Length: 308
Image (cartoon, rainbow, N blue to C red):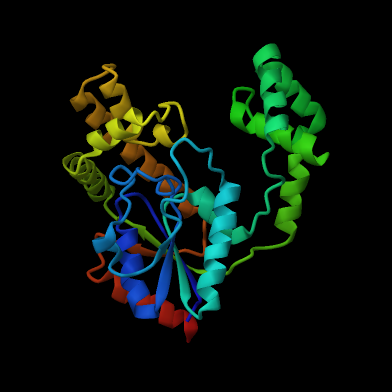
């Protein structure tokens, strides 16, 4: 049996439930791969599993950062690597479960990431952007790293700043570091399971129902608590679907009903983007949630077939 499994798919498709069911069957532990469940105090809106849903199965990488922190994919990979090593050291199976495709792919590929961010260099580059504009900074990047610049639009402030920061810290273009990572090959070779729906309308209905359930569970109060704690509405965490819209409603920029409608639409769009991302992975064994009567049993059948 594989000592590592990846469960991916769109929001509201039942990934956590499948992961927990398989964990019981395989003596496994779950490593969350969700870019918003990492934040403390953001529980309802991220559909973070509670004790009942975890059903005694250890879950890693929940509540590892404060909402006001910057949290990078590089930091995720470092923490996830450590969690997986711990799980494997005890002879258990690791189940990486979530819908954040970039995090999951970066973890599996073992991308080393060019360099950790350094405040001095970051402030220097951001200062150039503020004083001389993004076009000036983009032109600097074209001189330093034309390959990366070609892939970015001049308005992509975050990635342009990061690419220039990497060049200043390491003396090498980001494109070089990315090429070196690809030469190494993947760090892990997991068994991939993906959840999808034959009837997209059924997925969207589940997404809408989940949003309604979140509102009943107190999502609005959760957003208010974060704002009352002084969490800046402009932070990455507060840009998450559900939080951004309700923060706007609490500020009087729209009604509660409008916010809920926007959350549902944004969640459906996100589910579509997730499916697009994961469909590129030819290693995924897909399970059709709306047609499969017993997802854990079907997943176990696929796993056993792999081992034979």
